[in-house]
Image (cartoon, rainbow, N blue to C red):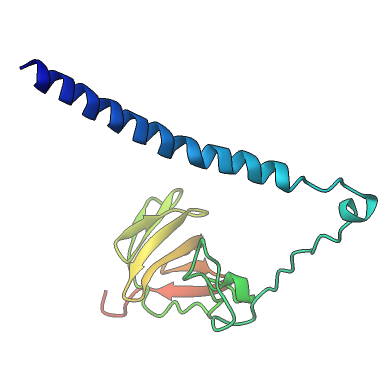
Length: 157
């Protein structure tokens, strides 16, 4: 049994010696390499090197590039996101005139307005923001997108 213990100790010693030898070799080589190649001293020529400037080109169309934060946006190309299309007020219908002569109300496409009020109205093209300019005895004057129009009650009422 003593032989086995001695043999195990010898094997352990050899293994530790091998590990120590292998791990010390790169350190010695690294230290030798550092001593062999000293860093050159800095000169005035090396500190005054030219630093290149960044150049940013604004793309003219989606093929030239796009905004990385808003990739579907067209504003980078100078295109207005909301085109100023002519406002069509043909889908607006004056359904009723309500209230007293002192306080008139007009119902346009299921929305009730008084003079000076601005609201969104549902149309087949989507929401339209309109402003009630004037309420008359049988009509109403509205404005949307700089376009004024007078809506009349339907003749069958």
